[in-house]
Image 1 (tube, rainbow, N blue to C red):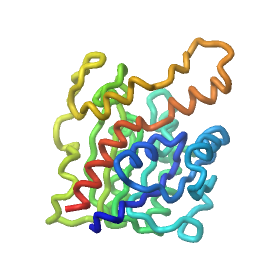
Image 2: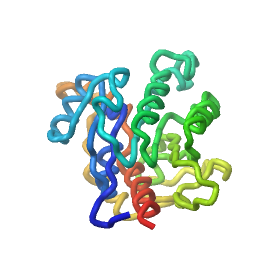
Image 3: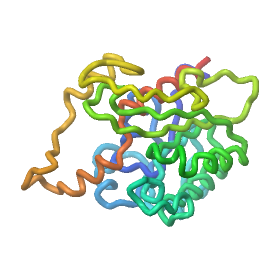
Length: 249
C-alpha cells in the first residue's frame, strides 16, 4: 500500500461517530456516513461537516456511496440483546444487517468491520459469518470490553473483521480469533490491561460526564441514547491501527 495514501472508510449506522473518531485517530479518512437518527446526525454534521452523509441505509448503495477500502458499522442490537424479545436477525431493526450486506456487496471494500452486543455470540453470529462468507469474506472476531482500553466500566461488545477470503493470508493477525477462549477477567479501574496502552487510556481523562441523574442538561435523553449506542472510539482506534498496519505490509 502506498504510505502517502491513507485507507478510506465509510460508516454505516454511524451513530454519534464512535467508529469514525477511532478510525480517524488510526490514520484513516472518512468518506461517507449513514445515520437515520436526527440527534446523532446533527452530532455527525458538527464534527464531520465536509463528509458526505445519507440517512436511510435502505436507500443507499453504489448509486450514492463511493467505493472505500473499509466499511464499518455497529448494526442495531435491539432484536439481539438479551434485554429484547429475541427476534434476532429476523427483527425489524437488527435485520438491517442484511441491508449492510447489500451495501458491502455493491461497493466491494477490502475490509468490513461490524460491531454488536455480546449476545450476538449466541443470537446470530453463525448467520452473520455465513452471510458474509457467501459473498467472499473470511472473518476473525473477538469480544472486546471498554475496560480493555482503560474505561472504568466493562461494556462487552463483539467486533468482527471481515476480509476478502485468502487461505494463505496472515493479515489481521493482531486481532484474536473467536476460536481462542474469550477471557472473562475484568481489569480494575484505571489499570491498563489487555490491549490497553497509554495512548488509548489517556483519552478517558477528557471523557465528558453526562450525569444520568442530572437535571437541566440539554438533550440529556438524546445524549445518553447516543452514548449508549456508540462504539467506544478507543476500541475502534485499536482495531483501526491493526488494520492499517496489516494492510500496509
